[in-house]
Image (cartoon, rainbow, N blue to C red; front, side, top):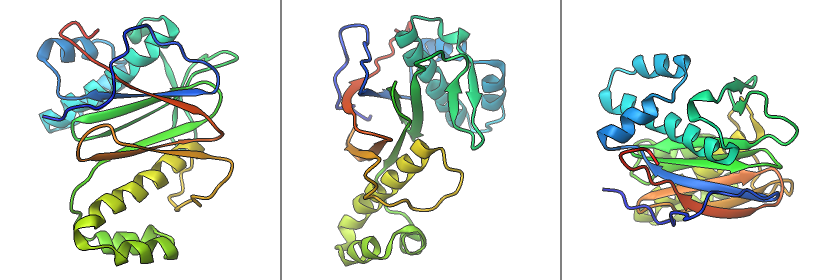
Length: 229
């Protein structure tokens, strides 16, 4: 059972300019909480869930999308089921009719854990992975890591490579998601226009948050009881 490290906030979330809140939540939920989240999904989300053959994958997708709706609705003081999304050219979601200062958000999930990043002022991206041995990691690293990073990674003891691999991988993914890029090419990690934050939401998981600009980051846990609260 994965134990989340971040605190559960006692108060209704207030998102100030220049802040990003990152929420961690579990995706393997009690039946009543899972049922409530399923009831918040749009028809297209429900249809996509229905196309997933494995029950665990289907349940986790529903929990991830329902949790995203729950978090965004708290900031907007809205009904989670009433939220509508548009999608950019490369599939990055945004709230429909966001107004002059729309929320910026991003969702990532791995196994039973999801992260939801929410901000106001700048585009952002988040990525999370479970740290594990990866067959063929050397070939993947050779294809996507810059030469200097590849040399450092290969010089590590074998036992340290999985953590280093996924630490770098999540940084790349978060930056690509912040940019809304549809072309998978490792961006420079020295880009002064972006801020990058390494996150550790739970044992055996590593994550990264990328923001197009400087920001303050608050880490939170979304606790979903039987009523989904």
